Length: 294
Image (cartoon, helix red, strand yellow):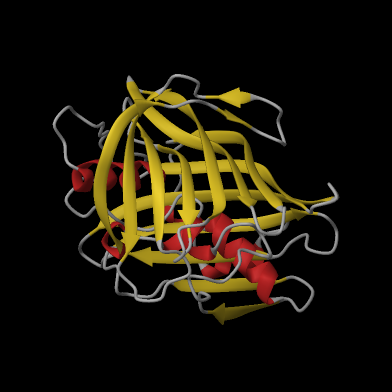
């Protein structure tokens, strides 16, 4: 059950935690020439967590692939509303549900997150088999994301303030070929390469190297290194540009994480995405959670 909850939390927070406090909600930000590493990474976090959109809804799948190539699959549906509301400090509300396979179908979480990065989220879990709601708390940030090849922190709660940054260089990305989709992405894309070092002592990684697309300010690729300087994990993210009312929204639609130690791979795919559909805040309550049927 703990791992199931972690996946729901991770998918529910796939777009985020309220970060980049200096940037204004519901606007589009892109990197500019002359920006330093901190300025670039603030835009990166803002875009990663889609703070430019009023609401987002999607359906998708998660695939867990072991070293032999065996695949486990989960289907999900999600909707989220961004608020950025200072009167009560609410950043966003998020509803996620498993729609398959049978053993997890109907499990759902409702999450309320806050502008204050030091305030814990409120998270409720709907257990259809017991027909009851249980209040739950988020896992440790360095826990595996449902046995996946990245952590809860990678998907949900890493903040701009958690690391220090250094701009190493600007270069054209050489491209990434996915083992899952067999496609090659971002060949020749101009990028910033930034070194991110965690502020926590004795953390599970010593540094990350992050490639940021210069055009849209999104993280397309990263490598993690241990204290001995050995690379042990890679994460690739593919984005599509959605045009809404003349604005360009870079939305992550594909994530592939590889654990170089175990040979395992995890893939998350957003198959359908809807943006700014006018979702109501009334759709994100405990009452709705318990009444819903999937």
